Amino acid sequence: MANPPLQHQENTLPDTKIKSGLWGISWMSFFWSASSLMVVALLPTFLTEELGASHTKMGIIEGVAIFIAFLSKVFSGVLSDIFRTRKPLIAVGSLFTILVKLIFATASSIGWIFVARSLDRLSKGIRSSPTDALIADLSSKVERGKSYGLRQSLYTMGAVVGSFTAIVLMYVSDHNYRLVFLLSAIPATIALAILFKVVKQPTIQNELKPKNTTWQFSDIQFLPPKFWKFLFISFILMLARFSEAFITLRAKSVGWTITLLPILLIAMELVHAAVAYPMGKLSDRYSKKSLLLNGIITLMITNMVFLQFNSILGVLAGALLAGLHMGMTQGLLSTLVAESTPAELRGTAFALYYLSSGTAVLIGNTLAGHLSDSIGTRGPFYGGLIFTSIATACLYFMLRSHPKKTVEQEA
Image (cartoon, rainbow, N blue to C red):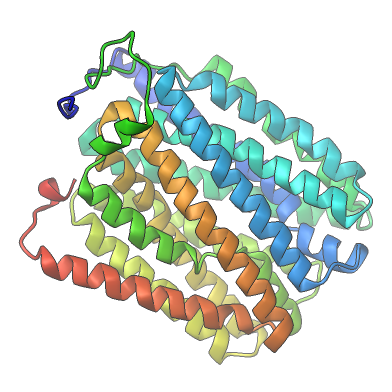
């Protein structure tokens, strides 16, 4: 059996290139997110109001599309380790992101929306694992949480800008969905330009095998036990991470108008953006698993609010809490993956994380759609409450079993 990999990695870029690269990735994420939300903010009502899709069909479309995204992250993450390069895969994913917007703009049936949504998530999947791995390649261990927090904050602000842009364009275009979908290609094009102009990639030092040795499936044996424990808990959590479409449907059922639904997403993402960067900095100083536990408990409370209150303000409060949960956990999840794995298997680790997450999200979205059709718009949040309770209990007992572990040992 080969010796396990060392954790050491030298960054081959000067500090100025590293800093500009991390900011470049963060702004790429901003424009990717803006492009996506210009479509996603309007897609539930476009499907149900314009094309007559049921909530179950919408849940299946969202679940399958997100699963495809996660599955493509598996292959792109592994490939980025095999070839020891990240940028080409990010570029391919970015190009597909631009092209798929044309399909959204011309889709005339539920089937074509399903194709477009699937390809859109495929493009995101192709670029996501290499992007996450590239952030870890560029950032030092002591500031890795802050680096992921910065990316997550700008990514979320992109969602805010995209949702707001969708509102304005829908208003000035007299509810022309297809025009908004077409214009969403513009921010995606800006992201691709930033990749080529700003972001540089360091050499990935592989101390697991010689340079002429190819990646093999058996290399997964070098992923440590702490990674697999984290993967199990994240799988349970992701079962409760159904699409925001079910939040907008809940909002519509209590009185939110179609035109104002994107405002709900804007409010949620503003909280997400405001919390992500400070949480990233906190995770560099305090126990990441304890912070994650607090974030999961916040999602439990979120589901309770959606279940308990049947009013416009109640749904707004639930959306704000959902944004708080995302800000507390999303960057933290990426940081935990990066810090629990050796550098030369980092893309593979993100690939496995996304495969697990995608499977869970597919199950969760399908179940949420069924519950929504069966017992009403509260239905998905009953499932969310059950899964977050299980995840909370698992992580709590894991922390109890290692009560004296330091922040350094945790990483």
